Image (cartoon, rainbow, N blue to C red; front, side, top):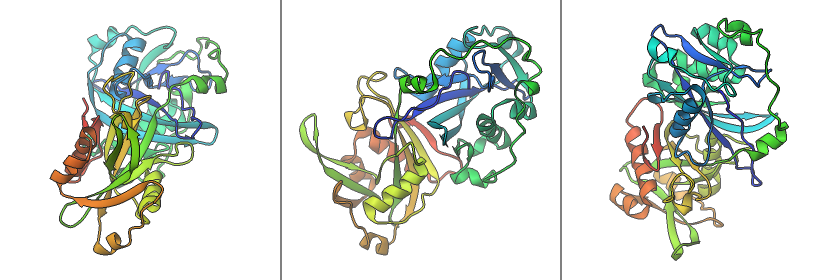
Length: 375
């Protein structure tokens, strides 16, 4: 993705950078790619860029970046995928890819790229794009191109299928040979690349804004009641307040994926060893820079991305075996929808309700902003 940096981890190991890119098809099914004038190693990318604190959601990030880079406002379609990528040589990143409506020839001729950010653009077939894009991005984009849009949004980890995406794609499918500019005939490889950005790698990462992420699990019993846990009282704006939530907690971003975090949190909080099921919801909680009404409980200083996984139906034996994490939790309770709505904060209830509703579907997670449908 053009301008997409990677995450720098914070002092607690939980900071992560977010980015958003856009898949622009044309009427012939080709894909729009751009050339990065400052990147000698991987010059071909998908339009898009890194999240900034004033962006209320990744969808807003995508719109802003396309406006800055290509000079127009796209009409975004559904979320194509979300990818949580870890790498031994750099910090982690969560990347959103969106579909855009196909560009007409007239719209394409109106593109006015920012020369500082974009050194050129062209259309590539799916096979060409797979070979022109760097490997991690190539796998991410190729996954989106290979499955029906009704199966999305896809859940990816290190650009490989996870969760429900494994029903559509093998865990380790073939990876196109990386050819870079040689696979992009519309981007002149003879044009001299500009120098690397002036900041060294570590300094560049250190200056990038970070989000936090949480992983939660939706457990219900045979009657459809939702399992909630109550945190130990904390000092809120009005003094010590009870706080109910779905089981789960913060993702240790520099060492685990959200799916692994959901497994670990169930073990630590409840004493259960339960593999998370399908990813039901992705809820973006903007920080104060984008939303002055941001909930302090979600981290008012920055955005928080909440992953909600299907924990499945619990048995009486599982409930009898609960061992609460005493340092953090006070009690647990099975709640019917009305009681859950009364105990949870507004955005938390709306997120839970959306996850419950999405259990009935066969596609990917629902994209939310503060519990409400995005887009």
